[in-house]
Image (tube, rainbow, N blue to C red; front, side, top):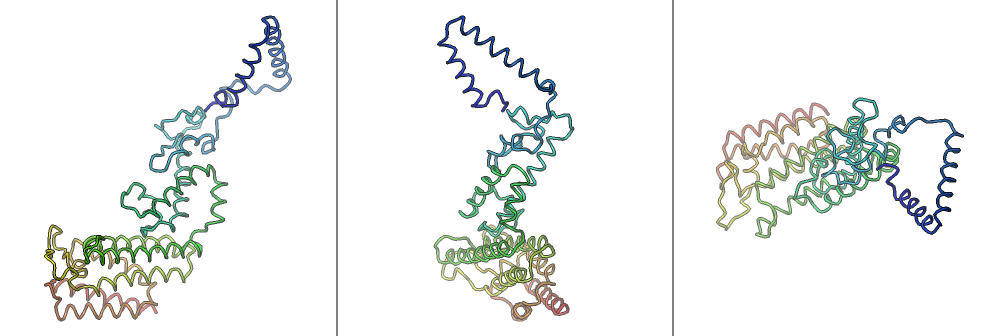
Length: 357
């Protein structure tokens, strides 16, 4: 918005016009001459700043340059100064004589938005790491708390126009500080509980999500926990909070391995119905299918084995259960070759963790 289109300027024009309207013609003329003379004297009494086209453009990334974009929620935002951006802001067209100024402003805007998403990530209720949280803005299945967290991000982005405001927010929400880490771990545990409760309700015919969707949700939680490890374990997160995330990984795997009973006993629900080889009545049998990507779970565990020493007892117990399945067979006809492969993988994992203690 140019200066001549501000509400104040319009009010000033209206006031002068109304005041002049009640004057006689000669008085209005004299009044106009007086104002012109005063303006001329004021202009000649100060150094010339050159024509308006020579004035410096708004600094890329300033509150004026990004005003039109900051009012939009992140899902609909188009940075005003970015190439191809649709903006009516006269000062944000990137024509400041510096090539790429608009791109630099857009990059700063994106960095600011990513930082806000990172700080607000612990308040999402879907067990998402910062990148997953930022990318989930348009998902229709988000928990209410996650939807609210997205709205808070949008509000903060609209209010914080520069690094000063962002740095102030950082003093209150330190990443990965103790409070940030505690809240994120807490909501990831809650997500795990929500998923298991959903399966229990589904087995009871009360909604929730079925066996296949449960495995998919738990794999997603695994991947997000691994992302937390990659980003923050070597970058400021203390050992106590690191252990809380690793414990959750092992507890999820324990839950999957120990739940191999028929959850829909006494019903006509088919074991295989449109999901390939994924058993839809037994959680562990579903986990074993290639379509469930059990290798992704094992990859995360292998990558984190240097942080699992405090869970060696639970991991050893999981290995024993899987070995028992492989030796005795699993009711429901799960292939022994897959069980043997999984038992071997857990044996190697336990040995690797023990070698690091």
